[in-house]
Length: 396
Image (cartoon, rainbow, N blue to C red; front, side):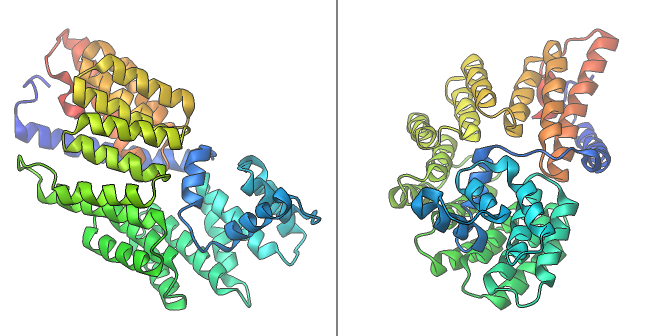
């Protein structure tokens, strides 16, 4: 800090220490994290990333019959109705009731309960449910594959990548034509920076079902990541092929908000700010509860007009829309850091809020690093009475 962030060796050392501290703190804190139901938009996006989930499809079929009304009165059927109506809060309890009665639908109820445990970050309970589903006799192929995908995803979220990828490989052996396996493995390969593997998986997913929008959009995102990594450190524009890939997704699926939101981000990266803002506007119109798209639109104002006030106002709107949007708190915290030592306490407060909402241990570790960097700068500024320019550099 005293060197004004001008010594590269000091910056590398500070970054290493902060990462190490963040990982140690996250390891302890993540165990104590309370279960939290994510926003409806988050849950809807996750559920829509499956084409062959037998429970979700059963819920859709039920909702299409008599507007969701049925003569069935069992707890599992009630859970399916709640799933279709996006009334997510009571689903776990209804599934538990069905399981305790050991009915014919107990295994389906367990898969649904495990899914919601997973979404609510109750990882131990989710794993137990997925294991029990997979241990069931005479299990339908689609049920087995769905449980393997979700257990594999959980393992990768816990950074047990080998175990997770083993589950995906098993799922492919059981049902090699199931688009969901390739789509979700592709998504995780992007997270693990295995971009070539991700592209192969997503191409496979598209070949299995050419009309499944999420796979097309994830493939464009993987292409974008690949291009960005190749251009790193080079002052070159984003290739037109990346923008065209997103544009094709928007043309194919004009009502799919995620396609427009990611296209807007790419347009922003390419410096096409007005076009980007228009696409964000359309994405938010299609999905008014998409808080993350609002955060990105806020960042666009900063990138485009250097308008901190407008950016902050838009990101605060995202928090009003979804108070559980961890990314919004992280971005606001980072913006506060850029303002200098007078805003550090506010930055730390925002990072702590983001930490309480983080969904994975690695996310939490990253946020602890940001928070600790802000605290270090605040302490130095207070103790030494200094007001350094560029005090936000450690969190950039």
